[in-house]
Image 1 (cartoon, rainbow, N blue to C red):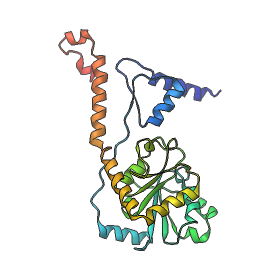
Image 2 (image 1 turned 90 degrees about the horizontal axis):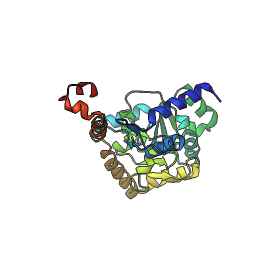
Image 3 (image 1 turned 45 degrees about the vertical axis):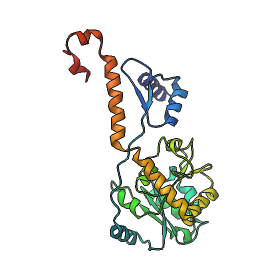
Image 4 (image 1 turned 45 degrees about the horizontal axis):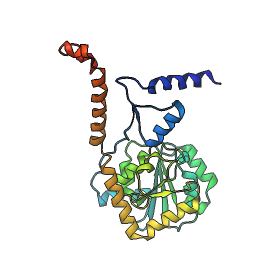
Length: 271
């Protein structure tokens, strides 16, 4: 009954309605499904996921120095979570799972703020809190991917999931929520590119998945390589090509016979 929300919904419905020379792009099949549930069938909807950049070459000395700076020893096994709002991307269940894991398993949270730190202090036992490092927002996340041993992302609401994809590009074994909680998971094979959580809010399942990766060398290598290979299919050059093809299709529809007969006089306005 909110006029403001009703106006937003009406504006969005106008933007996604099918018409000549127009395309609606969804970042995942999950978002495409949600759009069609809200507004009905969209004939020209396209699914083009976000791209990911290739990871820089590993630098063992830089990794060791960064781990030392963060307080991690060479024997520690570091789980990583990167999020603008860690509490919405599964931090509460990760903290519960940490209580079931041995002391050498540490957690690095990147993107946390004062609210995140306060939550950790209030909801985590002292012996677990000592194993948790919360880093603030940063534009250089690469260094944190480089120091981690695995990536955890038990999100309950992610339209796609860029952070798990970036972790794959860095060769990290990944644990992520299955569909419908994470759009990226629609394209991932369980135990091939990542471990998919059937119950993201279950700390037992998450702790068991972390333990499997840390104790099973074969599984860890398979996930690292499978995720790396998957990330290569999502590189920015391929995503850019898909958008260029889409633009060409849309512009071809906008060129009427009358425009073509004029020898391209008005084509500049169509580009």
